[in-house]
Image 1: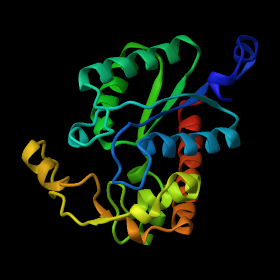
Image 2: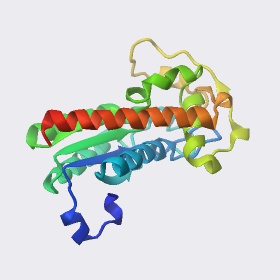
Image 3: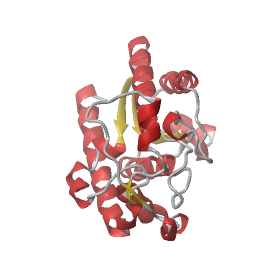
Length: 236
């Protein structure tokens, strides 16, 4: 199921109709979370779902477009055009290797637009069906009530990391930085600087492992249902 661990013989024999590609980032998440948080969370969900459905998991794309956090040490901001072209190539190679439905499970907000653009272009040129899912907002909605202070490295994301890799979370360095996001999407360096005075939004001190387990459990369940629906719709 895990592509990078398969040999050529096993890959040729494996049913490659459906695959999941986790995409994240390497960027600052407060002082308490690992820099790879946005990659580790979708990768965890992808592997859990793939194990249940016996489908393929492509290697995670760890680097992403991180304009808002680029001034914080630990952030690797990949140019949006470069990132777009790179994931576009991965999608095209997925089709060439026999994949019919590619589920792109995104863990970082800055990636959303380039991923959607790449998906549209590749789907138009090939027979590949692609869905781009922002896991933190498209999945696990039934458990969002658990979090009174979500955000970047906030209560929700910290809870999720406590659930999958508690040893990587330094909860003693957790902080609080409440911000009010604009009601509509605005691309503005001035607003980004105001929102991200520190590399944290929300209150990570409210995070618990139990909340994270409930959120991720709901996210996994939702993704299983989504893939089943797409499989039937596309007759795969």
